[in-house]
Length: 175
Image (cartoon, rainbow, N blue to C red; front, side, top):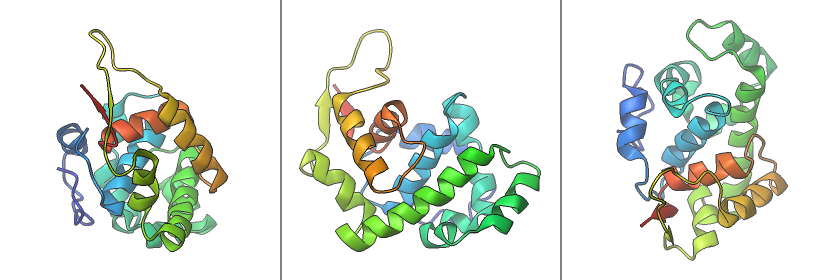
Protein backbone atom coordinates (compact mmCIF):
# COMPACT_ATOMS: atom_id res chain seq x y z
CA UNK A 1 0.00 0.00 0.00
CA UNK A 2 1.13 3.57 -0.58
CA UNK A 3 2.88 4.55 2.63
CA UNK A 4 4.67 7.42 4.28
CA UNK A 5 7.99 5.55 4.02
CA UNK A 6 7.78 3.99 0.55
CA UNK A 7 10.65 6.05 -0.87
CA UNK A 8 12.59 2.96 -1.88
CA UNK A 9 9.64 0.76 -2.94
CA UNK A 10 10.91 0.50 -6.49
CA UNK A 11 9.46 -2.93 -7.18
CA UNK A 12 6.05 -2.37 -5.59
CA UNK A 13 2.87 -2.86 -7.55
CA UNK A 14 1.75 0.75 -7.92
CA UNK A 15 -1.68 -0.25 -9.24
CA UNK A 16 -2.41 -2.58 -6.32
CA UNK A 17 -1.04 -0.05 -3.82
CA UNK A 18 -3.08 2.85 -5.21
CA UNK A 19 -6.25 0.77 -5.45
CA UNK A 20 -5.85 -0.42 -1.85
CA UNK A 21 -5.21 3.11 -0.60
CA UNK A 22 -7.88 4.94 -2.61
CA UNK A 23 -10.34 6.70 -0.32
CA UNK A 24 -8.31 6.30 2.87
CA UNK A 25 -8.15 9.66 4.69
CA UNK A 26 -4.53 10.72 4.99
CA UNK A 27 -2.67 13.57 6.63
CA UNK A 28 0.76 12.52 5.35
CA UNK A 29 2.31 14.90 2.83
CA UNK A 30 4.30 12.18 1.06
CA UNK A 31 1.21 10.04 0.50
CA UNK A 32 -0.74 13.10 -0.66
CA UNK A 33 2.03 13.91 -3.13
CA UNK A 34 1.98 10.40 -4.58
CA UNK A 35 -1.82 10.50 -4.89
CA UNK A 36 -1.55 13.87 -6.64
CA UNK A 37 1.04 12.45 -9.03
CA UNK A 38 -1.36 9.67 -10.04
CA UNK A 39 -4.00 12.34 -10.65
CA UNK A 40 -1.63 14.31 -12.86
CA UNK A 41 -0.48 11.26 -14.80
CA UNK A 42 -3.97 9.83 -15.34
CA UNK A 43 -5.07 12.83 -17.41
CA UNK A 44 -5.92 11.28 -20.77
CA UNK A 45 -5.10 7.80 -19.44
CA UNK A 46 -6.56 5.33 -17.01
CA UNK A 47 -5.65 5.39 -13.34
CA UNK A 48 -4.03 1.96 -13.63
CA UNK A 49 -1.49 3.20 -16.18
CA UNK A 50 -0.79 6.24 -14.01
CA UNK A 51 -0.45 4.29 -10.77
CA UNK A 52 1.89 1.78 -12.42
CA UNK A 53 4.40 4.64 -12.79
CA UNK A 54 4.81 5.19 -9.03
CA UNK A 55 7.63 2.65 -8.45
CA UNK A 56 9.54 3.89 -11.51
CA UNK A 57 9.16 7.52 -10.47
CA UNK A 58 10.30 6.69 -6.93
CA UNK A 59 13.44 5.13 -8.40
CA UNK A 60 14.14 7.97 -10.85
CA UNK A 61 12.91 10.97 -8.80
CA UNK A 62 14.62 10.66 -5.41
CA UNK A 63 11.99 8.41 -3.84
CA UNK A 64 9.40 11.10 -4.65
CA UNK A 65 10.59 13.02 -1.59
CA UNK A 66 8.87 16.36 -2.01
CA UNK A 67 11.86 18.58 -1.21
CA UNK A 68 14.15 16.66 -3.54
CA UNK A 69 11.64 16.58 -6.40
CA UNK A 70 11.16 20.33 -5.91
CA UNK A 71 14.91 20.75 -6.45
CA UNK A 72 14.98 18.96 -9.79
CA UNK A 73 15.99 21.15 -12.71
CA UNK A 74 16.06 21.08 -16.51
CA UNK A 75 18.95 18.58 -16.81
CA UNK A 76 17.02 16.25 -14.47
CA UNK A 77 13.89 16.66 -16.59
CA UNK A 78 15.90 15.89 -19.75
CA UNK A 79 17.32 12.76 -18.08
CA UNK A 80 13.80 11.64 -17.13
CA UNK A 81 12.62 12.17 -20.69
CA UNK A 82 15.32 9.73 -21.84
CA UNK A 83 14.90 7.16 -19.08
CA UNK A 84 13.30 3.88 -20.18
CA UNK A 85 10.16 3.05 -18.24
CA UNK A 86 9.35 6.66 -17.33
CA UNK A 87 6.24 8.10 -18.93
CA UNK A 88 7.72 10.50 -21.47
CA UNK A 89 5.18 13.30 -21.22
CA UNK A 90 7.20 16.43 -20.66
CA UNK A 91 4.26 18.54 -19.49
CA UNK A 92 3.31 15.99 -16.84
CA UNK A 93 6.90 15.61 -15.62
CA UNK A 94 7.23 19.40 -15.39
CA UNK A 95 3.93 19.49 -13.47
CA UNK A 96 5.21 16.96 -10.91
CA UNK A 97 8.30 19.09 -10.29
CA UNK A 98 6.38 22.40 -10.23
CA UNK A 99 3.73 20.99 -7.92
CA UNK A 100 6.43 19.70 -5.54
CA UNK A 101 7.80 23.26 -5.44
CA UNK A 102 4.30 24.58 -4.72
CA UNK A 103 3.88 22.02 -1.91
CA UNK A 104 7.13 23.23 -0.32
CA UNK A 105 5.70 26.77 -0.30
CA UNK A 106 2.40 25.56 1.19
CA UNK A 107 4.31 23.64 3.88
CA UNK A 108 6.09 26.85 4.84
CA UNK A 109 2.80 28.78 4.96
CA UNK A 110 0.45 26.19 6.49
CA UNK A 111 2.81 23.81 8.28
CA UNK A 112 2.00 20.97 5.88
CA UNK A 113 0.31 20.23 2.57
CA UNK A 114 -2.17 18.19 4.57
CA UNK A 115 -3.14 21.12 6.81
CA UNK A 116 -3.73 23.25 3.72
CA UNK A 117 -5.98 20.62 2.09
CA UNK A 118 -7.94 19.56 5.16
CA UNK A 119 -8.83 23.17 6.04
CA UNK A 120 -11.20 23.12 3.06
CA UNK A 121 -13.37 20.55 4.90
CA UNK A 122 -12.75 21.65 8.51
CA UNK A 123 -10.60 18.51 9.05
CA UNK A 124 -13.57 16.17 8.44
CA UNK A 125 -14.08 14.27 5.18
CA UNK A 126 -16.84 15.76 3.03
CA UNK A 127 -19.54 13.13 2.51
CA UNK A 128 -21.05 13.04 -0.98
CA UNK A 129 -23.83 10.77 -2.16
CA UNK A 130 -22.50 7.84 -4.15
CA UNK A 131 -24.21 7.41 -7.50
CA UNK A 132 -25.44 3.96 -8.45
CA UNK A 133 -23.74 3.78 -11.81
CA UNK A 134 -20.57 5.84 -12.13
CA UNK A 135 -18.05 7.66 -9.95
CA UNK A 136 -18.58 11.44 -10.22
CA UNK A 137 -15.64 13.14 -11.89
CA UNK A 138 -16.19 16.64 -10.52
CA UNK A 139 -17.51 18.40 -7.44
CA UNK A 140 -17.91 21.98 -6.25
CA UNK A 141 -15.20 21.32 -3.65
CA UNK A 142 -12.84 19.95 -6.30
CA UNK A 143 -13.40 23.05 -8.43
CA UNK A 144 -12.80 25.39 -5.48
CA UNK A 145 -9.63 23.58 -4.37
CA UNK A 146 -8.34 23.45 -7.99
CA UNK A 147 -8.67 27.23 -8.29
CA UNK A 148 -6.83 27.74 -5.03
CA UNK A 149 -4.10 25.27 -5.98
CA UNK A 150 -3.56 27.24 -9.21
CA UNK A 151 -3.36 30.42 -7.14
CA UNK A 152 -0.55 28.77 -5.17
CA UNK A 153 1.44 27.84 -8.30
CA UNK A 154 0.22 24.30 -9.02
CA UNK A 155 -0.32 23.09 -12.54
CA UNK A 156 -2.22 20.16 -14.10
CA UNK A 157 -4.80 20.38 -11.31
CA UNK A 158 -8.10 21.17 -12.98
CA UNK A 159 -11.47 20.37 -11.42
CA UNK A 160 -11.47 16.72 -12.54
CA UNK A 161 -7.90 15.92 -11.44
CA UNK A 162 -8.44 17.73 -8.14
CA UNK A 163 -11.78 16.04 -7.43
CA UNK A 164 -10.29 12.59 -8.07
CA UNK A 165 -7.25 13.49 -5.94
CA UNK A 166 -9.52 14.55 -3.06
CA UNK A 167 -11.42 11.25 -3.39
CA UNK A 168 -8.17 9.27 -3.42
CA UNK A 169 -6.95 11.15 -0.31
CA UNK A 170 -10.20 10.52 1.56
CA UNK A 171 -10.92 14.24 1.84
CA UNK A 172 -14.11 13.57 -0.12
CA UNK A 173 -15.90 10.35 0.82
CA UNK A 174 -18.80 8.74 -1.03
CA UNK A 175 -21.66 7.37 1.04
